Length: 155
Image (cartoon, rainbow, N blue to C red; front, side):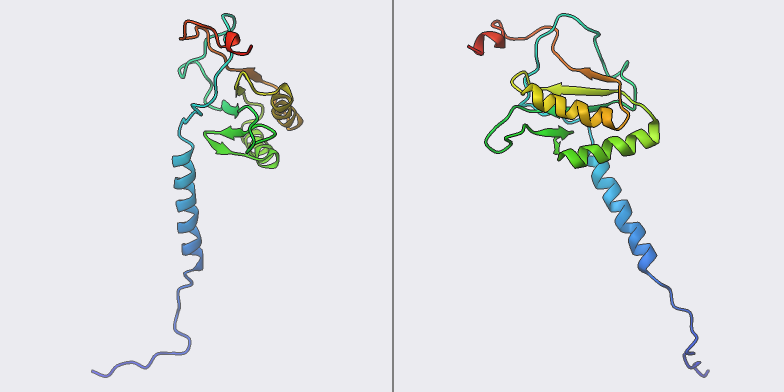
C-alpha cells in the first residue's frame, strides 16, 4: 500500500478556542471554589437585640455579604472584602454592577467590625447605591457570647 502524500490543503485544527474554553473553565472553578461562604473571623460584630434574625434559610439567594474591617497600618482605609477576597473600591463597584445587571436590585448585607470607621462603611454604601443597589442591611449579633460587652473594652 502506498502512503498518500500530505496535501498542502490538509485540514488543521485550531486549538486556540479550545484552550481558551479550558482556561475559562479553570478560572470559573477557582473563583467558585473561593466564593464559598467564608467569613472573616477577625471582624467583631456590634451587639444588637433589635432587628430581624437572618438565617441561610430566609436569606435571598442573590444576597451579597460585604465585610468591612477596622483600619490597620496595612489597611489605612479599612479592608473591604467579599468571602475574604480583598477588594478595591473599583473592584467592588464592578462586582455590584455585574450583579445588578444580572439580578436587578438585590440585597446587600454589610458585615462591619464594631471598630470600623463610619466613613469606611459609608464608602461601601455609596458604591452600592451609586450602582442601583438600595436594599442594604447590617449584620449584628443578637446575643454576645462573652459575659462583658465589648463596649466596655472600648474605654
